[in-house]
Image: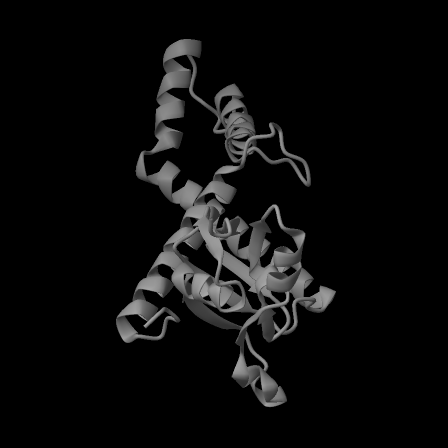
Length: 217
């Protein structure tokens, strides 16, 4: 009777961030096997080195697209008798970030700039929308029909509309300061995740077309 093979369950996320240019299997993959010695051996397996990161003048973020078949090939180099069960992505990205801890003042400056742009952009959009549908004229006519006298420009309608608009925005974006109203993801978080997936998909497709992805031969 032949020796029974061990099964290794492998899971790799679509996009993994590393801070060491020497990438080991344990940096990107989650693995499970009944044989602990196999796990210890594979965890230290080096799978890639970001060569440009060796030059201090070229310390910048880098990305590389991998096929999981290449990782399985690396695993079989170390453990030929292991059956690999892939539980994750078939293609994935390894992103190297040499300096993950950016200065706090830089992050604060970006946040302030983003808030300013968002505030004035949203204000301009709301004003343009109100002007386009003539909200002022509609409120004035509605007020005169219901109350029976001309509107002064600032009535209960305008006040309630302003309060309702603010409350509606807070409820829609599900965020007040640092706290969320409900545990559900905010619309911005949902859109950002969609955007990240689209970016990853485009990057992987471009790398595959140009032959820059790392795959088995």
